[in-house]
Image 1 (spheres, rainbow over the protein chains, first blue to last red):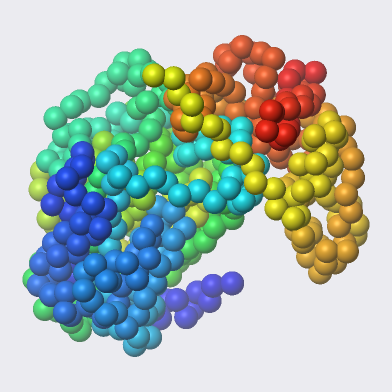
Image 2: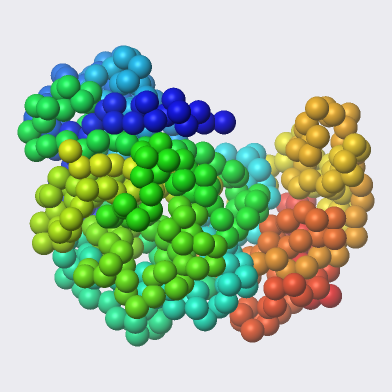
Length: 387
Length: 141
């Protein structure tokens, strides 16, 4: 079990000093996934005032660090390809904290790049995995179908109408945030409740507007020691708490369809950081689907099981609401190349450094970034603090 | 243009051959822990209920396939080219009498939410394919 006393000593022992996206997000057929990695890496290093030659640790998911390091032309002394879905990059932040504190490295680079929309390569599938044997032949393939079955079970337990209303609230409030982010795919497009309810079915109970975007995009994060962070060009953000884990791979093996692993990683990250829910100014919660947000808020402990629909009611999570959530516009309306988790950390860092433009929160000193990966399979949570 | 992409086919592994071979004969074989009496799905060469009992701690048991609907979705946009001709179709997780969850399709009802109640009784349907595979689907009992 995690040793919380040791983790408390680790709190704050590394800082995020740079974040960035690739140069163009959305529909980008002219660029490969590795180009999204490299562009984002350079942009994040520029943000930090560092060079690729400063990097001595590389973290990525989806791709092997072997491929990404070779493409970038670097020779890392610490390497981590932990790949457990879109939460991986949040987990990498915690791994970088531990590696830097232990002395393995000083400048960690986390990169992500994926052409979810335009990739020329087919998705490789191993037909012998349990999921491929027991789920895929029945058309239980890809995230929407699996998450939809989890959401239907939640509706059964906690009420269909109030769950539906909550999902609509999240779709609409997240779009309002996107309307404040020029980088967002739907920056110029508003969404009403009627738009939500009128959108076509993808996998009932999911409307199209319950589902994240599928885009081409990349992002990167640079993390270093507190000492080197003093020289950061645009300020730094403390990594205060973290948790990670998973409890299944395929959706049919999920122990409880209404409770993902954030039930452990959220409380652990907060306890390690020495903070409580009411201290949190911003929640960046991976929104692969509206349902993912609903269940994650409960798992993280912002509200109890089944209370999510009341928690997000009346556009509480929209701009000017009292619970800022996914202020970049989320995977639902900003960008979602397939493994979105890194963008939760990018936006949290921007808000904590006061660099979020029109959508900047007035008081943002503590943020939670929470990634969910696979089919509600894995989660990674970090608590970040302004410096 | 006619879509000819095949559906993904299960590729049985040594520890799952018995399950798939059973379906061909319209029999459902599950693994049970000898020490705890608890069932597991899918087949493994380890008991998740009593790992210390080893591979010898597992026995195969033929079961009825009587089940209840645990949850479902109605797929309108095919997640794979092989299912383009099937939408809308019902995916489901069903709970067998032996307290295991099995991923499947519900057949024999129109794919509308009002036709599907969580907890409804289901019985197995064995769907034999030309390539020799048999899939285990369910219909209202």
